[in-house]
Length: 404
Ligand code: UGA
Image (cartoon, rainbow, N blue to C red; front, side, top):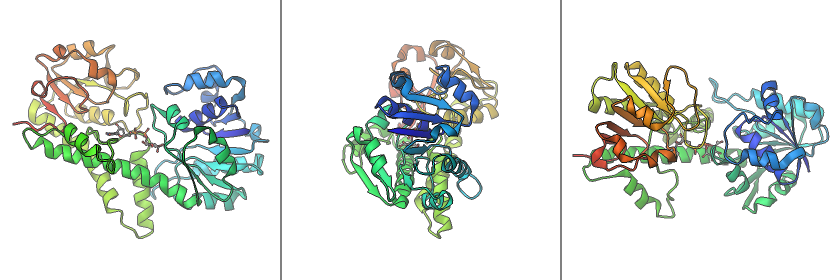
């Protein structure tokens, strides 16, 4: 099949690469000429495991351009452009602009919306463009986006003409839900809001564990998670959720619900707790380490989570900003991110720790679990991601560890 993908960020680029790798002819469109030049010179603009392999194996079946006219004979075009927040919740202007462009070039194709959009958007875009609009939300995580796209837990397809989408994703063998556009749109938000709630819940249980000598949130989460009704995923306590999706989507669904006179009280309190989380953790650090003014602090990890170079809404960056405001001098190491203003980048963990008496884990990179425990001797260690292989008695504070 010949398909188009508009918007070549994490979602669009992975969708394009996977569909081309599976034998489809794919045209990737982006408004950024720099991004297209990079892609055409085989420079990947993002770090995502397996992505380069899929692009290479797709070969000439995958092309990139800024020119929408290449979409002319596509059977379907995926819309994968951003949907940032604005004062009223969500800014749909990129979705509207991209859909309009597609409708002028390929009015007979199916418009498949992958961008996260509030319920009612697909119907609105259908009226605006006169095209058949399919909602096909994605549930992929950055850092494992290729794997998640090829092996999704489910495929959700909303709209009156699901066939093309069904056919494209058939290779996954995953369960398919064919439903209305509105259900598909809401499934995405409800899923993200629920996952953000799960993270917030375990962070609050971690707060409680810290007040109970002998308690450890990791064991509590394990004991909870083995109950299949609860599930063990997304029960890792830490710095709160970050990234380009959860913070934005929880706010969008909350505002949308308010506009319908519905109070999503749980989501409301999740948003509030998460926004206070970093300051709450820094206060705990200060209580133990004292005034941070003039002190060297080693921060391990910069990206918003492991296996990605994405810094959007990174909790590590929020942490660094908070520590810096208190006068701390930040030395940081991240396996992938090598550039961020206002901090001193170190080449490896050892170098980074050498300069500082205070060490904080901020991103859950697996590499940090292999740090030799002897390196921590004499340091004040704050394991905010519970990633270190070190005895609880040897750290100043671990999220969710109760101490006397
Ligand atoms: C999230 C969802 O997991 C995907 O299903 C969804 O498709 C995507 O948003 C989206 O809407 O496009 P992503 O933002 O890539 O994916 O990242 P997650 O793996 O969900 O992590 C989000 C944040 O929660 C990170 O800051 C992570 O460190 C934190 N987290 C995650 C925890 O603190 N504890 C956990 O147990 C899990």
